[in-house]
Image (cartoon, rainbow, N blue to C red; front, top):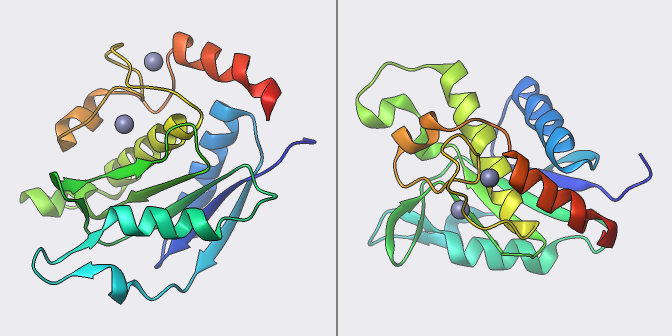
Length: 181
Ligand SMILES: [Zn+2]
Ligand SMILES: [Zn+2]
């Protein structure tokens, strides 16, 4: 593939098998190769002691400022609890039509909701959040097709109700804009 790469940068440990699956999803949906990387960024300065969570806006802004100009998009993967001021928590967020997004696995864990740990379900949820945030960087807005990954998700149940993939309408939109990349 003679195309620019999408970078997936782990902040904290994610198992390689999961990362490879997510990378395959991305290439399948957005038709670009994926490169995996790791960051050792000190997250302490993004920690808000009052909320006991990490500031998603600051992290997104920082990642965007250091994203490599030769890569098409950068998605930062996190294990910590992210927030933005107007919301209790976020699964992820991205710069609309931009180059950068973030996604966290923290609120996707069954254990957060008093349920039994389920690694397969956790990976499914994380795949959806990553594809969703990347979709925003490709200019996709929230979609009303119930199964579309671009449907908005406030609660974990919302994520479970949609599929990992883009609906035909969203896919067509990505493909028709892809000549500019
Ligand atoms: Zn969204
Ligand atoms: Zn859609």
